[in-house]
Image 1 (cartoon, rainbow, N blue to C red):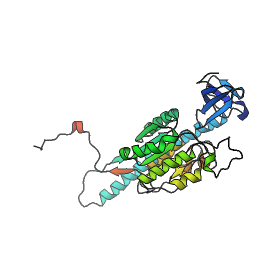
Image 2 (spheres, rainbow, N blue to C red; image 1 turned 120 degrees about the vertical axis):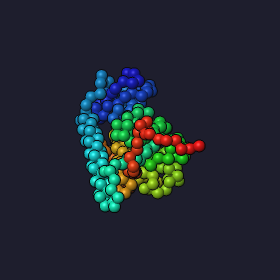
Image 3 (cartoon, rainbow, N blue to C red; image 1 turned 90 degrees about the horizontal axis):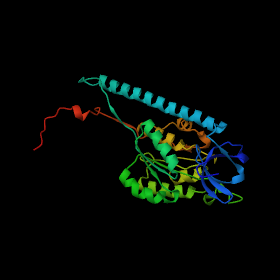
Image 4 (cartoon, rainbow, N blue to C red; image 1 turned 45 degrees about the vertical axis):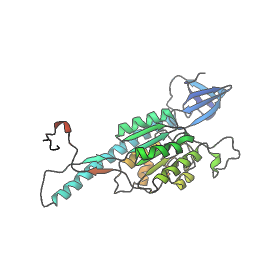
Length: 302
């Protein structure tokens, strides 16, 4: 068995596909290809597979991912119709008539910190596909607080995503789900949230999406996150935080995000993601932006 091999675990019925990240004597460090799970496993519990098998869990995740993408696209289409209808209604009540109004969009900007470079790459590809302006950085979970302290004043995002790897520690037995020290990285996520809240305390001025697999949901919310994982301490899909951030980016600043929509726009659902009522970050502007390459202008400055 070599680093980079795809494997499944016999003891778990092959429910999740992993990639071997490292080898340590009779153990391997493995990382989920779809789910934000970093674990170690005895080599004799691993079975090498030639390609990523479509397990029941993976198949359901793919179906849900496609549904989530379709729901977001439908939301954007309906939003565009509402925007145009609202502008036309305002235009019809204006004393001085002009041409039928149009507008430009300014969705919320995302600053995404990820403790895994492969998941970050997938996340950035989805932001691009969804046309969400996003800046992404691969940062070890322990360094996220310091990194946010430096990045926030420069990036000035509307939405911050703080994610990577987490989990309830096997070494702490009996484990205590109330104890933050029994989680791999929840304390690091909390420190990052606190830095972000020192930068902007208002929940509707900066939306924070935080956590990973089995994170201490309640502690992350208390620290200042708008949305967090994982209420039922389940594995979350690698792209769950992206879908929440995209929903925030394209919900109007005049509207509160529908909590049921948030849950339905994630692959893991209410067991994996929860949060607080929060306003969106999307704005429209007038007049529509022009193609400056075709604009005829007579210079007036001396």
